[in-house]
Image: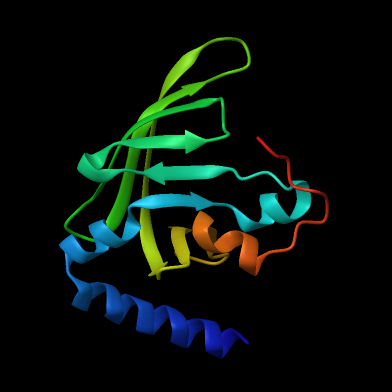
Length: 140
């Protein structure tokens, strides 16, 4: 399993570099949600990346996201504000490497060293086909 993951990551890095930044930016536009949250609670929580570099959080009231971009090194940068429970507002900024980007999956790597830390998001067009929630999804 570990060898398969390493191979997939190596291939995704190669694919990312051959895509070009413009294609990656076009492919990332859309809604991306955490499959583990959806599976356990039935809630869609994540990010929406819009054309023109605009960004918003999906069902995460503590985040007031404003912008996103992909830098020349292939890192996704998200900026906005984080609201604490006590009402304090702080600047929110992340810079995470795109480990995998496909029509269905977005993997962001936040730590390369051991232990490797990555977050997986699924496109909301696909998440309901790929993940079965343990509870009934909340309808809006």
